[in-house]
Length: 281
Image 1 (cartoon, rainbow, N blue to C red):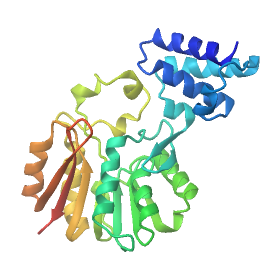
Image 2 (cartoon, rainbow, N blue to C red):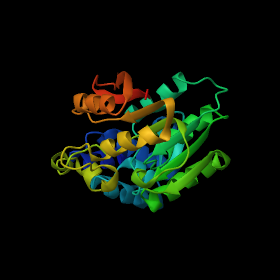
Image 3 (tube, one colour):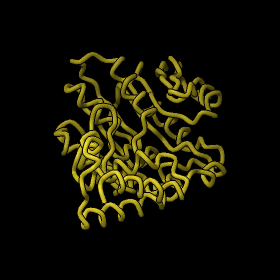
């Protein structure tokens, strides 16, 4: 079989499982097997595929048809300008979370020397992306999952940032170290009802502990806002991602806890996604 025939086979298999990106996924998986760039694959469609590579491709197609995300199959995901190691112990980085990185960079200059705390760091992609762009800044990243921290530490090593960041296995509730210029977070914000309605590729494969946030979807955000009050310097910034339904409740929580809301950033679907707030008390 040539590359085109194999791509069509993969596409057909994935289509039967209602995978919307079946054609693209088939191309990405074959390119992975062949260790080629996708563009290179697509200009060599008449080449023949070896039996061994066909077997490897079909194994990957089988994983994908079971809704395993491409990022977990590849064990990597691009975020901001960089590649990060990911596995089933961390959330897959998403484009909307890049808003946090962008906002911190907009609020600092290239020579800034700031202290940052990343709450629920997961893969470490948020804080590590910032530290890559702000070499004079220092970070602390916390997570309740030891397995997630192993991934984050691997990413820090890969990006040569281990001397710029400390990783601590702890819940925000129990964390009492230092004062920070920025606290950043992509906390869990999915309520119990919405959790069971998530797509299989998220609900089955991604870590539930990084998603679920109680009956109202605000349990972790309440902890974050409350604890950040003690951890932020005066005029320090709390920047975090939210669920689209939570905007007004979070606004009230922030004001009640002595924060000024600078702005609410919207994602590409024009839904409220990231709060920028300042500790004023």
